[in-house]
Length: 265
Image (cartoon, rainbow, N blue to C red):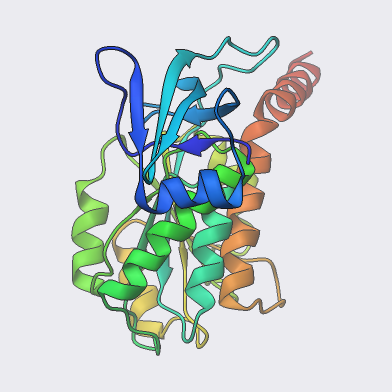
């Protein structure tokens, strides 16, 4: 366990009481005993260390202390990535949600497209929320990945229009659009967007009508050529590609500047 995510903060004496599923995980699965310590993350993102004070009648009581900042840790804030994911069939969404949380995705917005087969109810939504928490605790992601209830296509565009900061919408499509064949993911990210919204289709992809709708609403099309990925692979592929380019932005911006200086010399 890289970190334990707390549902609520400590009281005025910096004590926190954990019960139910949290108690079961810490006491019966992790086998924590009185006097031991474990790392945790408060709702606001603050890192704390909790010492187990008592374990009694299904309640674990812990003492919270602020965690010392890690030496050499990066304070750079990357743009938010919000994943628009068309509902796939079966349990594929479980994997998509887990990988998105591990990959530092800020928000996941499932939606129903024309070729969506999967549907969801309250039980599945609760399971996805639990998967996010488990994934963040295992990998140590500090990004508080949120999960939006599944929406229709019209509701999805309303959500898109409500986003602030001129977000960059990226329609991942396996077929290049006319006139956009030479656009690249690297080229889109040069504009330094504050929010990036990749859109992934279901198993059958997007219909032509849906592609037109996304483009008319300001999304940009990009593709990886003639490779057709599974929807659960495409979500991870796109998120990873975006994250890597963002993490290495200082490197490629420096090289671009050097090349520009050479041309102007």
